[in-house]
Length: 302
Image (spheres, helix red, strand yellow):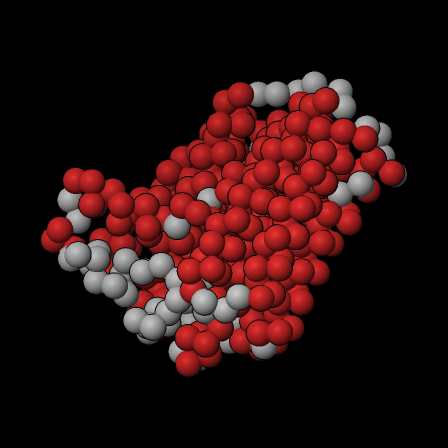
């Protein structure tokens, strides 16, 4: 398929590939948790929730497009990679068009953020600017941090701490310790999505000079990191029940632990691309299921 053929239904499929739809639960999930915590306190502003959700999703899509463009320019997405085809490196969309789409996507996020700044406070300007900058510099700029083994840390911060606490802040215009406590397991599960991705791409990343955390640690230690990250998220889930005002309903996410365990086993035992691509998708859905149940538990605790 060529860029010239990217019209109609095929064009939609190409842009869905570029957006990396399977990873988008990572941006939706923390917004659900932060908003549900506000709902536990009997506060809910639907338009703020919608704007936070739009902003989070479009920042992630913009990051994915920017990553697609930058990795292609650096030669990191070689033909022998095990993951899905990247639209820039695969010649499906011209680089300039991907770059324009990146700007347009971030533009939508900026519009959503402008509304949130107007209704919830100037502090969100800093949050939004930092989030977009982190997205661009993941694989862009003179020294992309994704090439230096820092990707998982930034995912934990921005798809966990920032996203959950920020979604809570837009509802109540304040921050409570429970928001940060709940953000930690959410962020750990978000980071685990990137860990799977980097385990899959470890060989091609090493050849391309992309020193991800998986490349630095090696395959076996990265598999152990994945298991530890996932299980630590579940271990920390009861904190707001044990030491805070929340009820045992917040333990509902533990119902997804058997599913998470099957993904951990798959990552530990498989090395082929299709299996790890499936594990990547299942990790994202595990995080989303975890957060939906956590949000439900918060609302049931009212």
